[in-house]
Amino acid sequence: MARNIAEIHARVRREFDRLKAISDPDTLARESIAFADGTAALAPVCQLHVADDDLLDQMGRWRQNNMQYFATRFPITVEGTRMWVRDYVLATPDRMLFLVIERPNRPIGYMGFARGFHKAGAMEQVNNLRGEKSSISRPMFRAHVAIGRWAERMFRPRGFFAHVLGDNERGIEFHLGLGMNRGRTIPLRKKQNGDFIALVPCDPNDTAPPDNTFVRMTKFSFSNPATYAS
Image 1 (cartoon, one colour):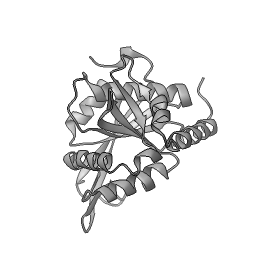
Image 2 (cartoon, rainbow, N blue to C red):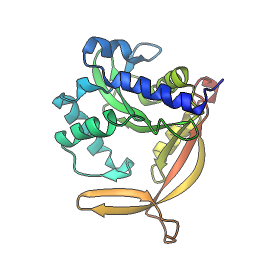
Image 3 (tube, rainbow, N blue to C red):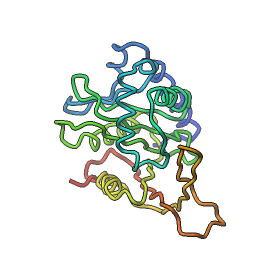
Image 4 (cartoon, rainbow, N blue to C red):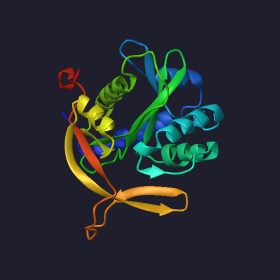
């Protein structure tokens, strides 16, 4: 039975806080979420990573190379990535980011959760980004399944959702392959301030054609493999 919403939120806060506080490699290895066959794992982004310039540079390059798939676009620097990890991931109670690590210790991407305190008790999956080629078959697909099942065991949320840009057909197909349902479309307007560009939901009175859209994808559970496309 699903927990009540207040209980879901409290559990999310406690677990996310605990994982973000990790400060040594041995604990990080123990707390990582392994793929079923042991070929990769999801390592929680934590205090240990804030000073890792090589990793931050790598994460920044991944973001730069995939900028078109995100609703915010801006110049990438190591210090900017450090600030994002420190201030917008670690310091935000309902956000959690995981590195996808190909064994033994090769980062190939990241993904995570936002809006862990969603009013309906669901969890939003965000930042699905594969940055490196991998010898593992469908690593990001398998990462989604692993992290979804982990979240179900830990929090028993009332479902999952994601927002994919409407012109990202590959991303939409990826989520459909996970068994997610295509939901409503949210019109977006481009806003620019210097080098920072953001696609934001249109004002209700804005009737002009949108600059892009979000497609909302939803799924109740990751526990049933029969819901996945082959």
